[in-house]
Length: 140
Image (cartoon, rainbow, N blue to C red; front, side, top):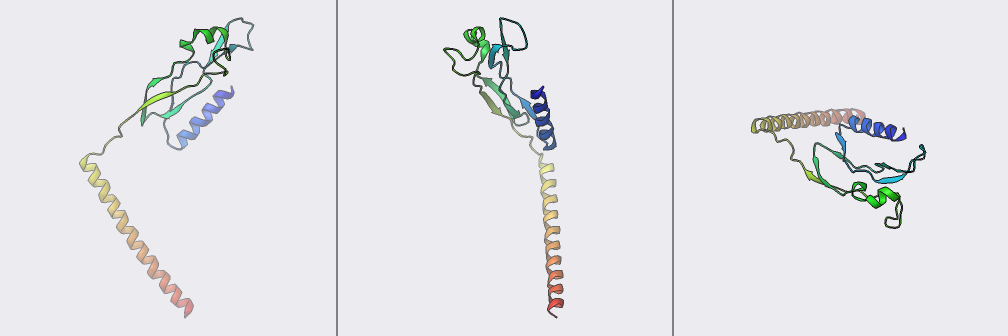
């Protein structure tokens, strides 16, 4: 289906960017006759989605959707109480704490950064000296 293609494409992109995306449970947001079936009952779909990074956020609450709206489940959307063809969605998230480095790991990281910074300074100085020599030869 088109939804699956879009979902797979978004998941592939997220993985390539090293994002860990999850989909929040929003409940069904669309109710209408299913055009592919000869049924007199309303079908329900999750039309809208909220993606989030599960490493940094935890969903803790959401707006109720069609599960709490028997009128719209029975009549379909839009109707005289809901003018849209689907319900709005919202999720409340709790921010997760990031993994903290131990004191030893933090010192090791700082030492590696200082070492890289020192090498970078040396390389800049060597490049500046080399450039000055080449410039003096050109002016020569």
